Length: 365
Image 1: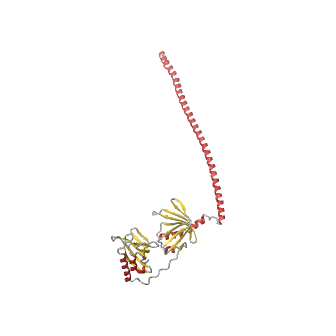
Image 2: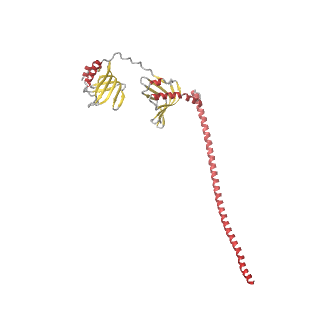
Image 3: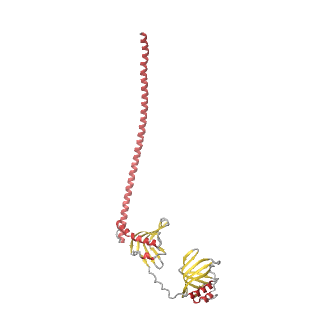
């Protein structure tokens, strides 16, 4: 019994002493962790407070900037209102000085533009029928007599895009049925060149469209085209050109032209002769050959006159016709085409053609 008590006393006393020490160590560890967490929280709060302070400073700066922008906007609005009042006063003074009524409102302008749509469509149809589908009347604001007012003309390229723009105050259309041309003229306006508007010079602007069929323009239905009077119809020829007489003159020409090259080295043959005129020959056709006999050019003229050249030789004056060669076909000049034969003897041509050789034999023939 005594041994048990000693053993119990020996084991109980150390356990009683160890438990408080363990608890104290645990509390110390907890206190250290709590202190560390408290330090971290304090640093986090300090950083948050610094971020809030920076944001408040930035918001204050932005607020001042916004206030400055609002002040600038108010100044711009005040300047714009003053400018509009000044423009209104200037327009009123100009309107009173010119004696014009104020500009109509947008509804009237829209109605006037709509009224011009049928005319615009009709003009573009006539252009298309005349072979000028790339030239378009884009807009027309009105009419004053036969003049078109406020016209925009567009010229399109092969892909249908706008290539050239002409804007005129007034546009006049003149049709010449005899010449089969349509002339578009305007005294004032501008055209878009290289992306910039360029005003017309003092002579104004003009566009001539050749090869026009007068029929659709005469039936346009709107009195906006000035149609020039046509010449009276030509009287029919009462006397036909006899075959024997034609053969006589053609043989003489062939004999004179044989071996007589032109100034360009061509040898010509007269292949058609329609008759005689007081000063020459009418409805002629000449073919030009090289020295090797190759056909290289052709002349057709309403009238042919044979004259003595000013220097030496003989010259042909070809009137109202065309010339065709490897370079293409083109109309003869208005004053006539001159074809020279420098080696020809005027005396021989004068004896052969008689009164239809102009200029006589003269010296050196």
